[in-house]
Length: 223
Image (cartoon, rainbow, N blue to C red; front, side, top):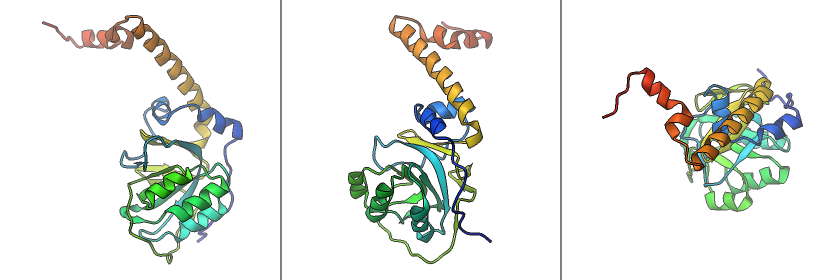
């Protein structure tokens, strides 16, 4: 079994820059309300935002050896996405590893585990999305995988898929769908901007959203 795959095809830089324009919630809607990780995975502090290609890691619960290995191999702009057993009672990532990630120009970390050194991580400016903060340390003993498909937060992720994350949570966009999702996201944002402009001008939300017609079609009555 190959544990570590060093290289994979990353999306073109122009596609990554295009998709960075759109928030995760828009991307989720634009691709048919798919790709959202469990809402339990959130930024460790409000205001964090990350978008980039997935650098996938699978760690044994309570063990961060493969995460450390991944930091050594990842490229600038990558987002480390770490399947660690859906186990919040561990802090396998902290200030030292965040410092290493910032020094390498990595874009963020997403994990289904806990992290520690929250205030210090915030001071580094690194973008971290996890199940929460936990001071409990981890060992470095068990092999896992790097740059192989993983499942995290209920969603399958492959190396090179796009990860987009903010206060709302984390969404995955399959790499072959980036251009299409960008086009649909742009159309969605244009439509929403038009609706909001009309609302500010005194328009009615039921009419502008089309819900009025839906209510009528379902026989909704008002007294």
